[in-house]
Image 1 (cartoon, rainbow, N blue to C red):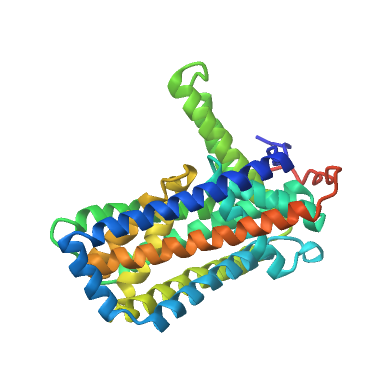
Image 2 (image 1 turned 135 degrees about the vertical axis):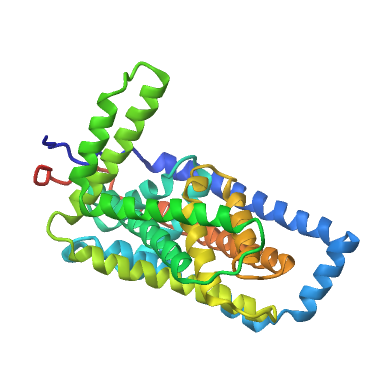
Length: 366
């Protein structure tokens, strides 16, 4: 079976960017206000007041500030991961690409579905004159590598780490770790051998009638797998050495965030259990990917993260919630930075009106 279809870049335009900018700012302010209101209400209860007073008495401001600063470097590593997959002659500056990644972070919150990658690719294309398909395929592949490395790290640390889990939770965590690890292997295989996954997806889809409900779902999954596989094929057709560099920057980003969270834990006068913490962050990052397809569902990530901090890393519940809020508020702050990036690019007319040239078709998939 052969395929000569290139990766088709979805549509995104200046009007969508302006709409997302307005929606994103409203959403960030509203979500931030909601979190603040909930914290105030809880702090006024007797139990909440006791926990709040205890946290304030133990908290080290310099450690919490340092934690936020350390976690911020993850965006630079995300930029380096994406940049590693672009041709050397068309690699944007790291700082500029990092700023556009922050813009994509805003878009992921403002619009339904994984629009952040598409919007970021559109900005990169217009700002640095990179073909939109090339920017999008490299960005999507970079995201797959990020998820695969997180999932595999989580599964590896589950296997090698003697995690002391509360009674009744070890089975559920083990199943989650197994599923996430399998997902990481699947993403890695999708990146390395996209042709096999296209064949498998097509063979499976051929067994279902697209007119039925189940068949429609299977065919949509086939299209999604095929698009991801074609993106990986387009990016890596000249060699897979770029994958190693992207994986290196991805792991560096995951470990940087983990160190930042550990600094926050120390800032609350708690002991860091490194194996449990690394397992918590990588597993949560890989396992909650579906949640980010819907605005507002990031609260699911917060709940999952706080739960694993308590069970796997043995952080008290109040401290785990406080650390989750710190991570979330940092994300919201950088979304506002991303809003500033979008506004600046649109206001200064950084984009050419004509569409950039499309990427030429690559070698046929076997």
